[in-house]
Length: 186
Length: 122
Image (cartoon, rainbow over all chains, first blue to last red; front, side, top):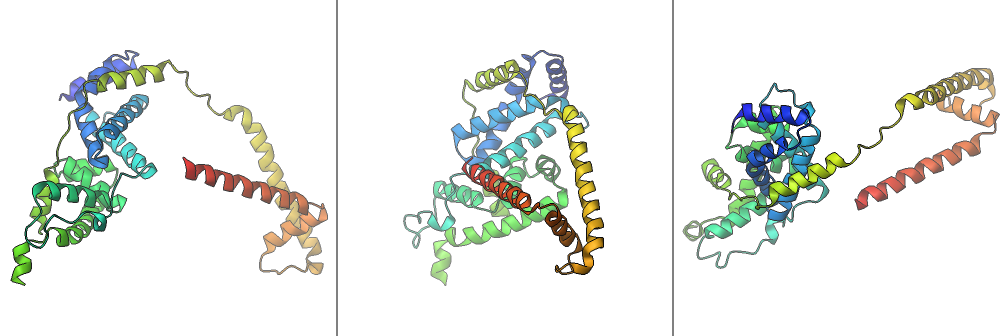
């Protein structure tokens, strides 16, 4: 994805050529929809959120200072909107305690699907600042500077939130993911 | 569960592909927004004289309140620990403005609670 293509398209949009924004949407639809999906785990809602993010980006296009790549600015706009959206209507998160127990918890570990589902719900059940930090950090392939810029927080703050978020998550998942052989050994 | 386990699980999240009509929907929304006239901005230029007059009136009132308070402090029954509040109350009494103050407070409370109720519903 070329930064120069983004810049050229932005300039065309600002010059009044609305159609040039379609190139931006085509280029960034995948990442923006997937980031939204990680926040809500609902395909339809993710597309609605991404659409709102593109609309907001279009409205604020003149505010892009070009001192950072367009993608950095776009992700910051989208992340900000997704977080507000989740504050307005929280994701359909169920408390970890309310998740159905694995079919035979005492005799076998969770299969991958159960594990994945439980993990998603546990992440969504975290306090927002830790949840957002974890979602954005792993979305950016564990890149601290990118995630910090998307969230608009200093890197040190993000590291602290990640650490605390992981601790909470680990504590919550420990019981659920406990291996049966470990229990038997005790 | 160690850090590596958690990193591995959180890194392997599924990716989705946007639906085929997604780009069209976005562009439709943007074209719709582009064709809608922008919202009328608040007329700050026209409101500025009124706001300035209101500010001058407020400052004058506080000044007069203090002047009045100094003159009548000897016969005041209000505690001296809150001189500004006492001055304002004394001045309101002097111009029979207690009911105006009460009405303003009731209006403010009504606006505050209405906004809270509407905010909770949105």
